[in-house]
Length: 270
Image (cartoon, rainbow, N blue to C red; front, side, top):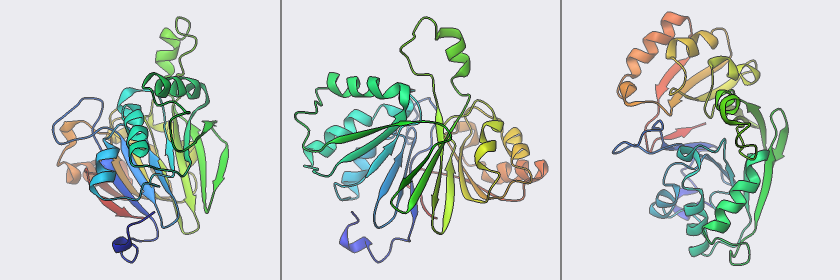
């Protein structure tokens, strides 16, 4: 999975930040995407960033990613999914690709690939689909993935659900646990309290979006929670370069953990 020159330098577990922008396209900033990996497997959290360009540019093995987690169906989280699948095909991937998505979105994602002419009959690797169910724990090698639902799309479902009954309005973040630690990917939130199911136990790093919650509300919610570090992702331009200000807001709210502002290309040891 890892190029030979990287096998002795990569930590046991690493996160690579591929995109930090909110839903508005901006020069130099990509949409949602974080790659978690160790020497045995890799998990791509959302596919809004140009993941395929990074993989080719970094000369990553064609077995990366082993698995993709698509939190919900907004285009800034899934738009590069068919492009990535096409890239893996043209790079002659053979190993299966696992794709996890909200259960109600799986059929639509399969149709998306078909309409992009990425048919199962022509792909040289199988895609194994898993419907995400909030609260269910998925043991995957030495990792455990536990989904949690957010209220990000609840208002949209209340407004449009009866008119579009086949559309999936589910959004799911994930708690990732491994033998030496854990992290949480918030996906998109409806409110800061959506995080409660996954921050009551110790968390090494929380990758949390800042497009749909106010920083003060987030840090008040985390007050007293055993979260070591918060890496802010999916944030609007107003927060670019404002790491010290965000740490101040956290301190004023009483949160004592470290606050960091993620940027494209960052590699974070877990």
